Length: 225
Image 1 (tube, rainbow, N blue to C red):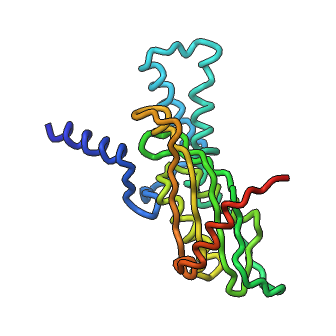
Image 2 (cartoon, rainbow, N blue to C red):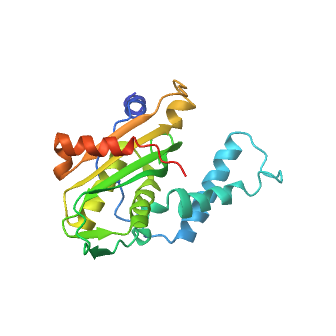
Image 3 (cartoon, rainbow, N blue to C red):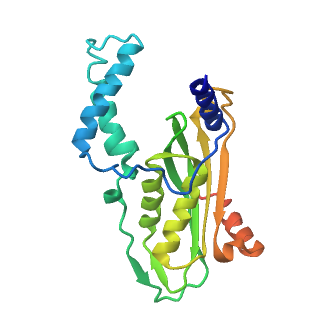
């Protein structure tokens, strides 16, 4: 009976979109196996799932699916779990003395909900105010992508992006807003296809009302080319 109660409790936590930590929960032996060893194990697990569902894996269309899924998990959609793939973010002296906020908006987010392993798709808007150093624009996109490429909750992803940029830039003056659709809401459960989720994290000067308002006004701008 206790096992059933635990399962119900864990399921409820997932449906209520509760996160447990601002750090991605990882075991100490997470990188004991090589990528290829992980792919071999996951491939067998995916095959077992598909066979349990009644699918015929001798079919030409399905035969390669376990291997494709395993490679996708390890090398693509969960590749951000591997610290070796963390982007190096070199900083440069702010020689042109730009003292206003820099905003990188509409950064594409492709992530995966850790409760149901379904996609999270949306946009991230990131800003910082230089205290003497700047970072390459593409590095901001790469940082977003790195932390997105793992099982996630959107709240944690937002915090991780801000913390990483604060460390890289040696400033607390960093902000991030993410607006995303969760297929665990849109395609199952309540099946609300119109709803999206907005999360934000404001550090340093962005906690001040005027600075925060300026940032939010910038991300409303309609950029067309």
